[in-house]
Image (tube, rainbow, N blue to C red; front, side, top):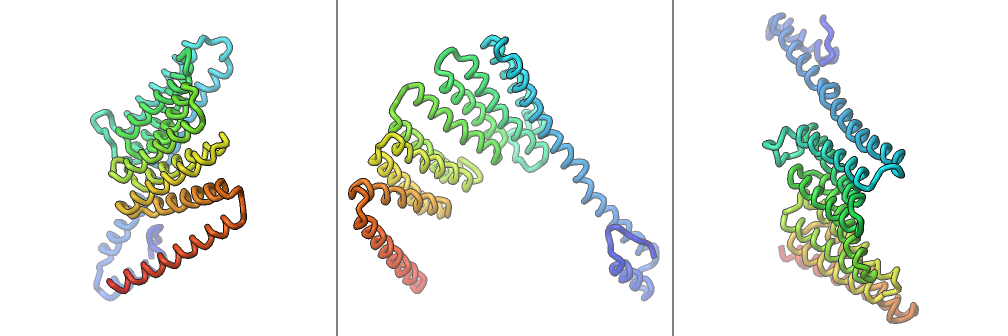
Length: 319
């Protein structure tokens, strides 16, 4: 009896029984085994033909960025501002050209990110948003943070539009925060207004995800909740508790309103977290940390939980 990598001995024995009983001829059995062997080899081929080249592409992109960084690090003091920006800009251009090439060319855009080549292209395009941000920051003679953030955001948006994927969406999230924080920072605004800017940015992400402009929607919701909740708490660093809990309340309302339209559990988590922050900070601020305020919050929360349970039970009974 022949051996096979695709079939175990028990399966081969069953095939041989079919031959012995006259259901299959010997040549038919061999044809079945050969077909299964071919399928087995095809299933294993991607490990060598696809996965390894994809990994090599990731490593190559990382080496391009690392090489440019190393070159700048070794000769930073000897290079002019324009030379630094030029090296980073050329690096960005190489990454973008490689990204488009891996995705199948300009005519293949926007890609769906389904193949290894398209995934690699998305990673390279996302990396280009970072290097172009550094290039813009190096080239600008003033307001470097603002120009770096805005340039990086433009490239990140282009990357997401051309190659929608989690990695390009993540690049857009990072660059949007850098752009807002850098712009407001260059304007020398107070931390309270920086908090407002980030809350508005986070809610903007939530709206875009709710309207299916960002995909997957859960990633957009996650980014929006993270930016908005963290941004709302910047007021605490400026000793502005009222700003912090007021902005947290705004975030909570936005999350619950959008949850009513989308039913995303991430929005529930964001709304609950923002509500907890807003209430605890407000009570602490209003009562000066008195224990009675904490007890009142605990009682109110218990009443709401009981009311929610009763309401959900009655809704289930009515169905």
